[in-house]
Image (cartoon, rainbow, N blue to C red; front, top):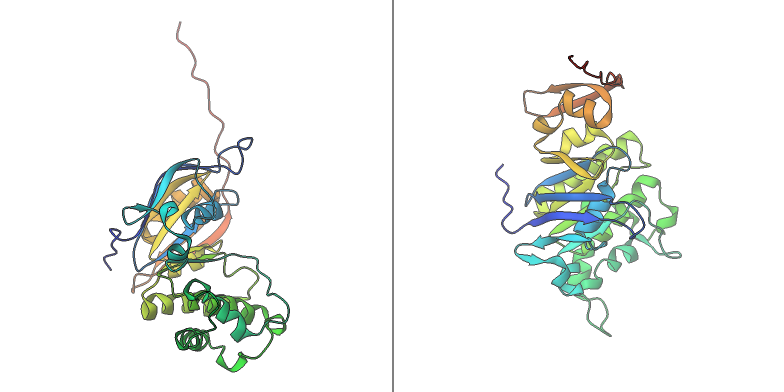
Length: 279
């Protein structure tokens, strides 16, 4: 795989805080999102993963630095153009009222709708494609509120798919899902990359899933990027000890897949010793 970034999303020297009275959440963060790949943001709680995702998606404005799409700042793009380029699905979402799976999916077509015009054949075709990809076609008339947790997450992803964006961001999409549904969802992410040529950026807490499915990893620590690159370069025992404070076993299969098994909390580093002065 030879990902390109010339037409992709890049961030340069981002500094982000939520208010002038709060400390910086991101400090001098620069990265390029490889085009047509699955990029996963990992790091301990409070390291800035979701903040970085929101900044890349224009949900937050950096105090300094900029995010570029190609050679243009994302903040200079018209809202409609940006909504047709990048979609984001947050961790927490509630369906409005008794909306059905099909109706929720149709909501994703809002960037393509025309004022005072109803859904078009293109809209319904996009919905059909999304429901088939997420295996929800048989549940199209079911209220979203009546679905299981895994099905409900797929319904929201179907809505994001009908938006037909080149980039899709998912903030902790496997949270609250059992193990089987976590793997189902990640396999769907792979299909979105392969069958729809999407560039995907995910925030994940599970290092094993990140190692298994990411093409590109970005490890954050205390608001900065500790390291980034392919899983084989990022998920090392030293990096996990320094950033996550854990001891872990890293293995690689014959097919090149990385497996990461956390074993225990790492022992704290020894206190520094003061050098004795010579007299």
